[in-house]
Length: 190
Length: 190
Image 1 (cartoon, rainbow over the protein chains, first blue to last red):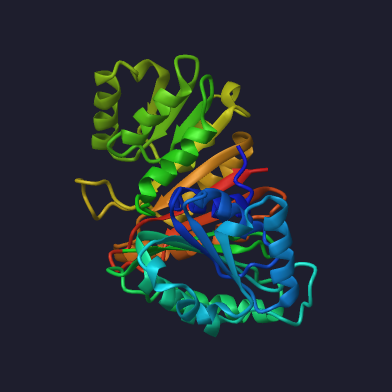
Image 2 (cartoon, each protein chain N blue to C red; image 1 turned 90 degrees about the vertical axis):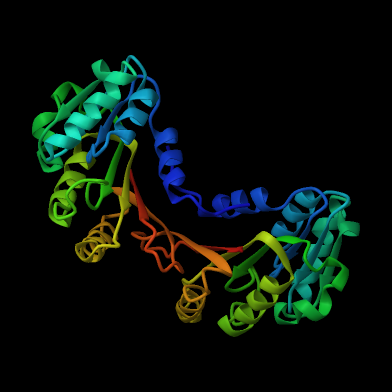
């Protein structure tokens, strides 16, 4: 068997968390692959809220959703995920069952624009307020770039101190590879 | 969804690794639960080699297997797993697809008798020689006791330095819980 494929594991978690009629959040829309994935999971009765600070990411995500005719079940916000709670309508509070962050830079984009621990932590705190019990936040942390290593340590420090009454935090990572495979953190709201 | 249940995850890995006709190893027979689990996975054409330094563990495992009429597909060695390569017949070399270690003390037994990193590392090195490519070693590391914390650090240090051409090493652990849930390490032979 193959242990490989840390990206599929992130998707396995989301698949288990998000079902038809659910609300999901893509905190880093990027090229829209996860937004599309979530849109399929939540079905025609569900909804996806996606965030990205870069215009080109929002455009790419919009195009990808439109090409599969799924744009109507998604709302794209051209702003950072730290504005999440202000952007998501209150009618969706308590119904968010899955959220994903791909942390690092936009693949194929400007590598000087990277995510940072501060906004991610702010968004996680907001998500833990507005998610359903049992909802899952998946962090896929790319840390091959210099800022990524710092971000990883700050995030690990934060999530490892979340009270266990509030969340269960799982770390999933390959630990002997020299090419810095992404680390996955899954946070289950309790 | 529930992220809980780190023990089931160890079993999911073994289920994927061990199929009918395969050879499996229970490096710490203990009360025999994993030996029995492996015996069912490897089927009537496969075989399980189980090790334990404690008589009472071997007796408990033997009874458990006998009660399910599966003792004939298992060989129990009342010796430490560091003797693995000398005990397992050479005809089984290259056919071992799964191995499991439950590290700590025997549940319900003498808590002063604990596993140590040195013998575990020796057994891992031997397993990487005699396993099939793609074979999986699962370490379930209980580290609530004082020696357990030391053992965990020594094992993490060892496995994180395994050359990636030789093995892929995955760490799976809950990181915010105060009751020291076991940590899982999965090693895939490459």
